[in-house]
Picture (cartoon, rainbow over the protein chains, first blue to last red):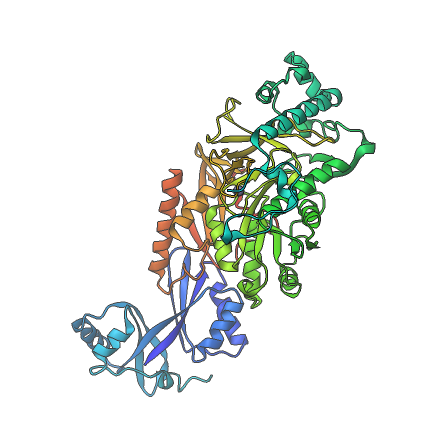
Length: 145
Length: 457
Ligand SMILES: [Zn+2]
């Protein structure tokens, strides 16, 4: 139900994001989705990767600061207003969202939104009857390893 | 409490505290000499030093003559206050051999330190001086329980610097097995430590942190190795850094103090109690002065440490101003040693920088960081000048405890640290978070401050 998200510290200078991505690519690790959040001087690059343990070990060996966080993927239709419907449910249950981003890869015609909740277990128990949560296996099904 | 020991008569004995039952090393006997005996020994040796310097060192003779002081005027220990100070510039001005008091045929070793600017300073030793030096280091080691059978890795630089050979001879004298690893090639250092079953390490505390870090990367957990203690010195370090070293490596971290001008490492050392550093007072006489007026301050008051060599013949140093800020502790140490202690040296005048009229010591910034962070991150202080205004930037490497998947959480830590520093210094600082391993590691003394103010003035 929960997904392991890899977060990386990146300095705000040219080439740092690419050096991480290139390292993963050179080692045959596919990134399912990524998002970058930054301040003026540094950023946090977040990655969803099927073999997250291999990616973590590789990145740590190359001096990246790495953190693993549990996130939840919620399925949404490719239709106007579908995200706001999800947000309504979360709001009704007073679930705290730290941040969210879209899952880029295809998911049998649907899309997924990745949520970082303050308390993922609590969030899952509150919303699982109303929303379709994506299992890690389904999420990565169409991604080559 | 242990009974007072007669000098050099001691052959055996044990410390009474059952928790720290380390057999007493006979070499430590002088550490327990009764105060009165110590004072008469100090006076006799001081007079000998003054006679020697007056007869052989023109600069010293000229300074005494100027003040109409004769060596015979030194009648009691307090009369040392009549004597002029010696400063680092005196060593440079008389470069290379101007302060030597023994003929070259009696001098068996020279060391030199580069200093930060200009010519090096040169120091000299007779055979007897070398024996005094290695005895002082051996007494320092004995005070923290180093013994025969210990395997000691010396990771101070060997060469002109006194650290490597100084520590080396002390460990040899106490009967340890010495590995002269010198500095550098950190992965090999870790390999030696592991493969040789090293029990004691001597190096700078910042280099040891780098060794711990390197060991972790190599998959070596230092806590599982036989290494049990480290003798760290040659740079000021904080209590926070000590506890970090101890936590991460599982060793006991002891402080050794010294400077080349006096002898090298071994002027003083912490004992098992880890509260301050005992000065080997029968060899090195300590005073604390007000750095502004030169006035001698009472024990317990903080000021600049001034040292006089009492048993160095190649190059006696009389009232040498160390530029280290500390105080002489007034309480008796629980270990029973009668020789006095100085408190841990956290500040060295040479490391001080002035920014916007405020005197700043790097250790103040370290203390501020540690008031926020449980683990000392790798950091560096960068001074710049922009349109005539000095700026201070503190670069901090993110580590496990600082890094977070939310940018705002890292920003919060950044702000908390900069506020903590601002509270201590009273000036604004810019804290920058950096990637792991982006700040260069030192294999000797850590380079905490990068001053770019002259470059962009
Ligand atoms: Zn003691």
